[in-house]
Image 1 (cartoon, rainbow, N blue to C red):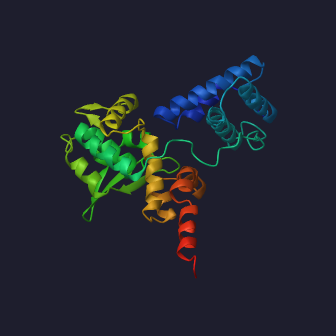
Image 2: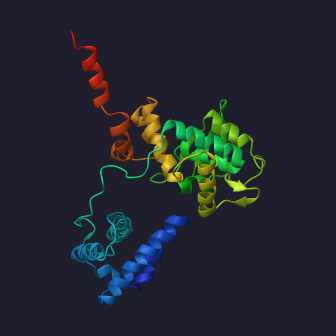
Image 3: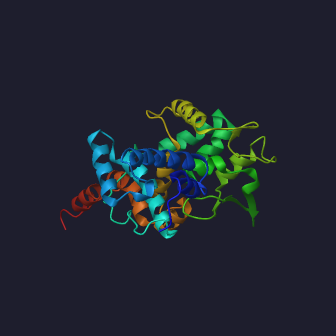
Length: 292
């Protein structure tokens, strides 16, 4: 192989396609891993599968949760797959790494149908931009980054419907979602509907994630909820409530922009074992047929 260039050369080349919060997170993960390689006296491209697994063990030993390890490791392994595909390393060291297992279900609080409706109504009364955000998260299942990047220029009329184009949707080059009536009405009510720029904003100022969280806290209080709602909770509710509404799982996957049934099941399993538990209908059926 040719002589190795400084680690920054490879890191910058790999990170070049990412933007926003993804770029910041991946850069942080890779810089931390680069520092570990430096302390070990090796170039970042000279790391081994054994080093990665030793890192996993050491992070667990110092109290890092598996979710944090999976997030960091995911970025690191993507980097090494990229390096292998480009011929920078002779072996894909990511291939044999044993990742911490992901739980079979999400541990986050579920949002019942009535609470979801109350949250939407409280968001409508709070601020038009926050109402649109809540609609995009709950009724369209958008990720936080997707909603914050959505712009009025991305709205497209289509035979009486209104579509939203998502140019940088995760795992896809682009995607389009059809907006339901409530989301369309919320967007049409925006004072800045006819001007270019982010859909979710305060007047001419885009709403960053931290201010959106603060607004959602206030909306949660106004709705009388005992938990503070977050965008990812609304996205999970989009999946679980869509299934409750009888939407085919294939359509839920396409709409949420997820790649597999496992991802849908991850959000739905914890909710489904309560809301769609077989015990209650089974007991009722047995009772109804007691004398038959």
